[in-house]
Image 1: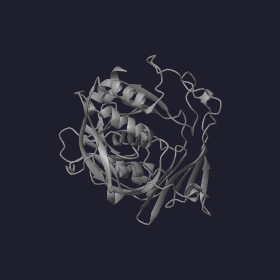
Image 2 (image 1 turned 180 degrees about the vertical axis):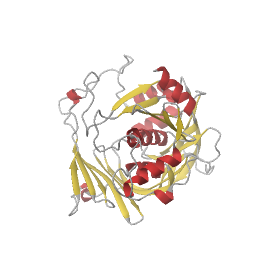
Image 3 (image 1 turned 90 degrees about the vertical axis):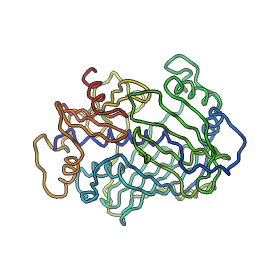
Image 4 (image 1 turned 90 degrees about the horizontal axis):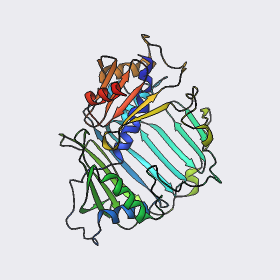
Length: 374
């Protein structure tokens, strides 16, 4: 496995998450759900007002990106298995428990095949836990006390101060390349909800359309679904099957590493240390990112740290459990000039021989052309 393949999850997962944040129209719209009429701007304002909400529930995620079945090779454990985890998130169905208490207390718990994976945030402390590997990571978010909020956006316009202003700013940003409409009201997890449909006007993107489903009372997003062009079934669907708007117990967010767990402290650079003109980050810090284009055709490039002793060198042939990620990648990557590509119905990834990984919601040819021209 080439060294650059180790960085595929860093590109795929953010792209999948971004895709899951834009949504397609629900095919089960319920005409009997009658709610006061709202414009798309009003629905977005309602969603923007829910940032301090408290709730818990069960979320189901399904993905159909046209990837081959790699289930027989997943879950092998061992070093480098984050690749397997990334591919697993892009295939099949997954269920998670979600707990939220405002903007700084969240927990997501995935339990599958007698194993548990958790991400827990309590204030400035963030923990991850993988029971199958008995691995814990911990990071402390930087202190932003006394840091003034920005007063303007990159285009010079003022930062929105109210949910309505934020909704107007969002609409202004997406409408040049997106048709935004309100559609039928629906019921999700026993809750009545509004839907806003986003249809890209960009012919280069693989995204066909998207819909945001918003709780009619609280404004909390209840479901996101992403449709790919030319594909009948949703590419990604994430939604609540049950939801409770009572405040979760504080005990839910209190994490203590289990006995015998391997705990790793992750360094987070301070705000002043994260300037773009600094040298590439050291091993163990976030890889360098490059953004090409804008809107629905945005392409993100990830450059791994200059030295990564944990990554296999080019041409190496690992054996045993740690070789499973290489076998997974062999199934989904296609060799091309200058590297390898992964083409799905919604996202394309190019793994360059130079160690860089690029991803975007465009087809593989367009992705490679943009990278070559950068």
